Image 1 (cartoon, rainbow, N blue to C red):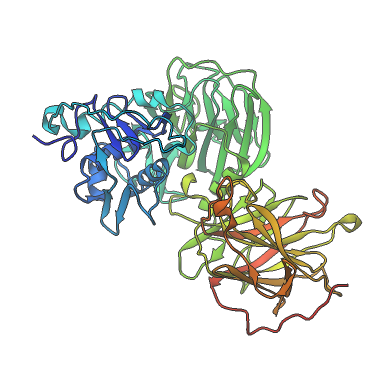
Image 2: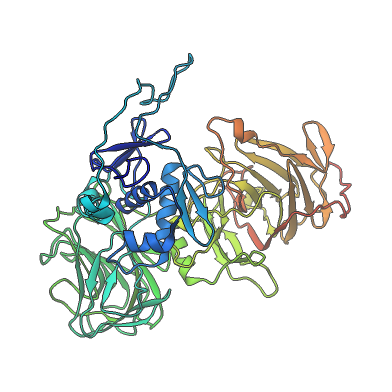
Length: 619
């Protein structure tokens, strides 16, 4: 018989401490002081398994077998769950404190585990909430996994239904995701909770927008499954998204995906599908409809997304291929008596969908337009920027949905981006992961010492309003729609103004660190190449192949000091190594736009010292 600290996990009522965090198996909870650390059921199971086997490396294959015993999921489910757990623990793969990655093998839990509550000693300052208590020893009843029925029988059985109902807040990322990548067999599973269903005769596998998908012939058939509590209900906010490809409406309005109450005409049921007019439709079970504008029955893949904002606004919004097409306000949604989901037709009747369906997702919140567009572009595009054999990278929009991504021109390294608004806008460079999960769509770590350059257009607006544009770097890993100035950000932003002046801005604490002279003869109607070279705590900038001279702290210099002041700021900034292009009209807020960046390049650091230095003086 093994101890609770060096072997089989203890009985369900036991508690362990992982550093300062309390792991309670009975309550299926993890606490940091008085704060509950939110964990999805499968993420909690992963933590339990890694802690229980912390004396060795646990392979990815073992985790897949033990934690998803009856689900047809890929290794991506393991990787994503580990990412979830690291975020919840405040851990990182680069500097692990809890979970160490063993390259090409698996993972090992490395933090100290104790059955005695840790003590924080009072040294004259306030102690961490919930930890400054007298030490206690807890008697733990030891039982082997055989006696308890195994980890799958104890820890996992507690998670199936009840823990789905215990979530304190809506999940930020997908709460259900049918990737439909099985490619064969007679069963499908979502990759989050294992919500599965059998495929009826007549439904076949086909090529999808990403991997495989399902083909429906338009005859009376439906893929139908039961929801034991994983999906949002009633008047709670949610987002549904699916990809469809069809050459016909099948002479009627048809449903691609439905979730909610199986009773006919229930107001608590939401559906995504194809309207009889050939446009997309987002509807409730009692036929309240938000109908799209353009026909999509063209035998091409299209993403349709329905957003219900919840009880306060009751607004329903329909997006097609990342862009919003229609919205309407719903009177109310009624509570669900029970909840089911279906693909390809309504639960019990109606005309069947005729065509292919792929990549169905549910979110327990209203996604932002930037997030919807980023999900669309991730699967629909081959990549926006070449990053020196690092893989595929895309542009993710920042500051709100005010950037248009344009096709790259022949010979250029990236797609172009244009500010379609009159204020802050921009893109961050994100690594495009194969499945395009929302949690992976954020600024990537492209390095600390680097050169970033672009061809920039900074037009003058009406009335002489000045615009600006330029690269930023050493920023936090922003999500779609986020800003990068202030808050917990970090890094620097180099602005080229319509006047030709170049300014260096620290993003947090926000300040202009250096500025150049304003040159004569600068033409804001043509593109200019700006390059920033970042090395340690200094920065060089070249404009049109000439090194820029700055005034920084009363000193004329070509090397701007760029120390990480955000590390001692309150709140402390986070340098995630992210980079991109940002636009603003900082001198004329809200008055001008139209900036553009093209041929964006990120390369390893190299000095600009070989270039000539500008000798332009102030006017």
